[in-house]
Length: 74
Image (cartoon, rainbow, N blue to C red; front, side, top):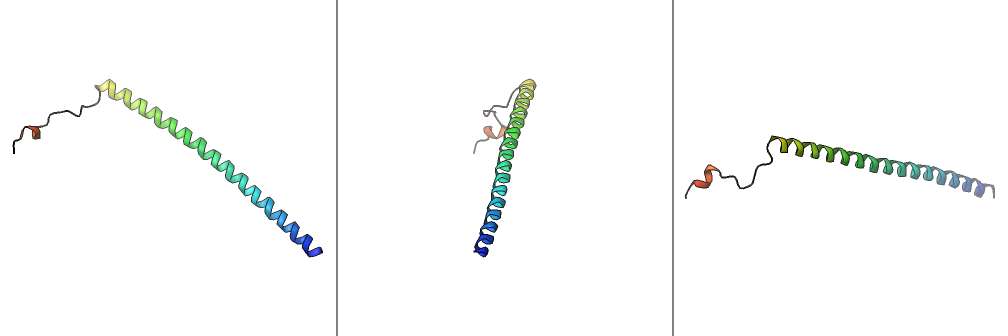
């Protein structure tokens, strides 16, 4: 009986240990989600800044630019 009680105590301690690890993993996942959201905001602000600078300089190039190669007849 004493050995079984000791075994149950060890199992309880192991369960507490794994529950603690699980809570730390949950906290880490939450922190990574917050960090991801923060990085996405930074990227969005950078995109807006780049778009502002490009518009100020004169806009984006058009895909229909005529190149000298367009005039070469083969």
